[in-house]
Length: 200
Image (cartoon, rainbow, N blue to C red; front, side):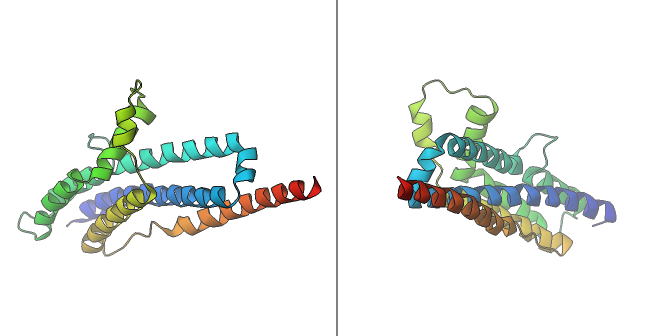
């Protein structure tokens, strides 16, 4: 692979890694919010508008970030572009070429990826839903499903990063910071709730 190929593949991989890092940060934040909502429901109820606004915004951003990773439009920067670049810059006889086809098929069969795309297209980007209860039943995404999808994407990114660039991408680093920040915010809210209940 020449220097141009390495530069272009690195730029694409960096962009995918950035999307995944933010996706992991968002899901970690949502996890922490859920944990605190269960531990201190009164404090959450008192600040319900804030919590709902925050939660909905994070889900929107999460699904958009994950959708970027598999967007097939020409101008999009995700795995489809990465696969195209691998085909362009590697020799046809390179063993890695057969992996590209395999990984494309694997991505196309991921049910969670399909559900994320449905949310992105029908709710967050265009909002084409009209009293479609079946949509919500068919496209429920659990935290575990999203975390598994991010991990699959990270593994795929690291496969190519290691083989082509001799590097790996750490996308889960922000998750710890997200937990710590939510812990601090809602520890204060729960403490405030406790003081108000104690004073009444």
